Length: 401
Image (tube, rainbow, N blue to C red; front, side, top):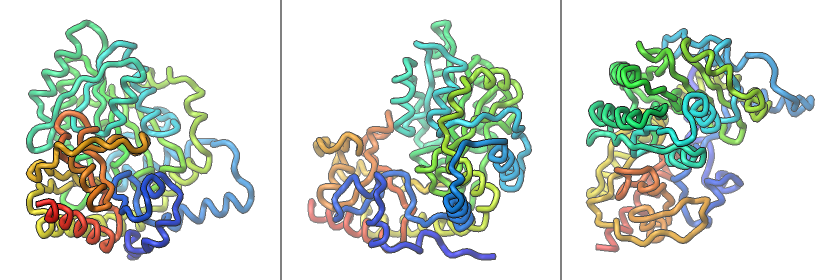
């Protein structure tokens, strides 16, 4: 059974009726390709279960472990992995809240948390706000994990005698890199050697595109003492319906049991219901989405070559996020934005494209070392919007020349 491409179902006029942050942070003449929300309707199965719940007033508290069962079954179907035991799973409000809680289980205030920069900007904020130190282990020039750099970071993280953790993005945000099983096995070997605990943010796991395959961190040898955070948030566009799972490897089960009970109460019942349904009954819709994203990443490559020949496009293997190297355009000196803090500061090319092309992108510098001069572009939109955005960006660069 084939489903429609969800990326082509909503018009720009319909999307502009939305009241979410992506569509309300900028004036209406701006095309918003920044925040990680997709321009899609809900998967029919998810919409149906929500309508049914509202119709009978089923808006109480979550119960049981159907969510964990659904993720377990999805992992077996899609990744051929049967390592999720509902007895080693805890409900958390969302992935980043869960990540902070997992870090609290294995580190203390003042301890070091290693990240692979450039990486999802909230990694820095959430870790430092919780009184831990961030230590960067930058990705290599190929935007893959540099094992030598990571080993050095692990060594430094443990040199003071405290605990240490590695907060991993798998697949990687913002680059779209999908770590291979071999890479993850090498990471696990290093983590074991240096006594570093791994917390894997795997929120984009359902969004691995043709040509690559997802390897759960807990599935590789050595990953038994780690944690994974999983959710339907990105795969089915459910950010406003809060729910996620913290999954412990067999050797981390006792640690997970120490998580305060009240953490699990932060998840929305409608969120749990929606995420469970997505993992149980959302495969057909997800496959249609992945086909659309695959087509869009190819289109984006064509549009960059046509309109922005000075930009280097790193073709993503997963997610719906593209990492564009704009350093060849000479826009790094563009002044930082003084706009709403919720949009995050803009500098360099992102500042330029917002001001001159009316296209909102995520500014690369907020992703840490290696991000300056880059932008992150969300291509989970229609071909028409993507084409218009790149056409505007190209025209702005030509006008500046």
